[in-house]
Image (cartoon, rainbow, N blue to C red; front, top):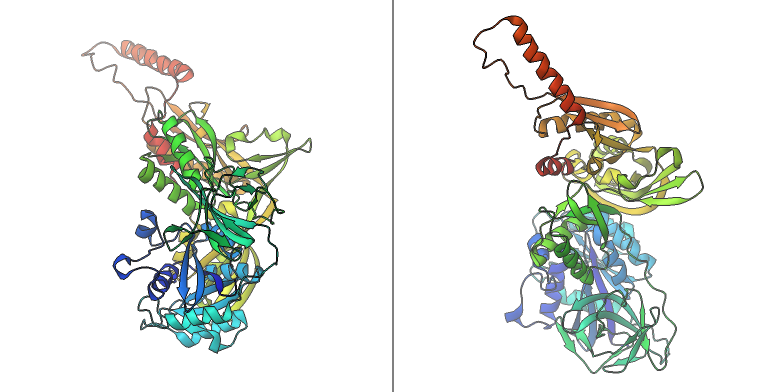
Length: 590
């Protein structure tokens, strides 16, 4: 165990984590030169195209008689749960900072997580070969945050391979070997899992104590399920079977189980014949954003259901339940970790399962406290109880950190306040860079907050957020009525102070989108029984006098009066069918 080093790579988006992982694999000879390619550990086509890491990926390296177990982690805030699981499986972390951009919001978020876990941090400045690199300033910022000496910060270029060998030596010297508990009983923490059609669930494990041998039956400590244990192996970086995994090793176990629900992330694998107590598990990933998923034709429900079940086998953070809409038919109400996670799921459904979906406007989960003392969680406006039964409503709030040049403080602060943000503090990294801390409702993040932030800061601001709890909110359900009938699919939750403005914009938009009828159509926005905005769609007028070549005025008036009465009767009895194109246009509005 003394020769083992376990570490992960943490950084902000695009600071070079995956490129650094490529160089480590190349320099250590783990991958043959003919097999080498960019973003080697990013197995999904979607990861390569977007240039982002979505799933954590382990790999085992050999360096000067030492076994190095690397975990490449995502950088985007939506996939922070992948980072937290990786940190719990290692003793050290490489903190990568871009020499041209410096410390960004997600750099700090991942660093705080690593420090909380008690990991040894190896700070690295990447992209030092670029002309715009500002090595002294970035080194100073890292030392200020970590409280370390400048000599501990290693300048590298993951692209060219500059100083990679020095980094590998530093990993061996600085990161401690796994702690030997001196226990012979098997305890292995499951930090991720994937599903294989032929082998069943494959659990990614960090062995804490004991030795796991292939074909020796295991037990899931929390679930209490027997695991056949068909194969054990290591990531090199492809899966390769080995005779056993010892304490301190990171590897995989082919469980042979056919349902991922049994093999939960955070569970403990132990011996079936001589079980050990389960280890403390992980906090379960909690969906923050909810949206409806429907097929365009309305008849692809079963195909969508099968695709979502298969996707969940590789993405345990995805949750969904059946839903129905008058306009879009049967579908699902799904929970996501954020907007990027939603976009990735939509893209994977199309690419991997050939299922095109309509995504309704994202919403958040409100806690509604009733007058009888009960609390219900509401994911969409249609489930909101009657206003007379509601005592108060609470909404999810995020801790927000914005890292930006100090010259943009005056532009960013009013923008965050307009989005219902509450100021917490200001912290200076150096005289030119600052961290603004706020508390902001999650609902404000869902619209176009990120785009506005990038706009007012000329693209220099970076953003990180984390769930902070719930707070009371004065929100109401905004109902849309067309021809006196409520359109449930267009109902939204809005702040009471903004209801009239949003209602007016909604009815104006609907007036443009709806086809005209043979009678006048009322389009209304209402909160409860009170109408707060209204528009009228004029009737199509048929010229009933066109066939009259002559005749007296009284006959003409008689025909016009008869037409008017007919339109009045139609308005009282007729219903308006909203075309799918109008629904889509309304659901996609920001």
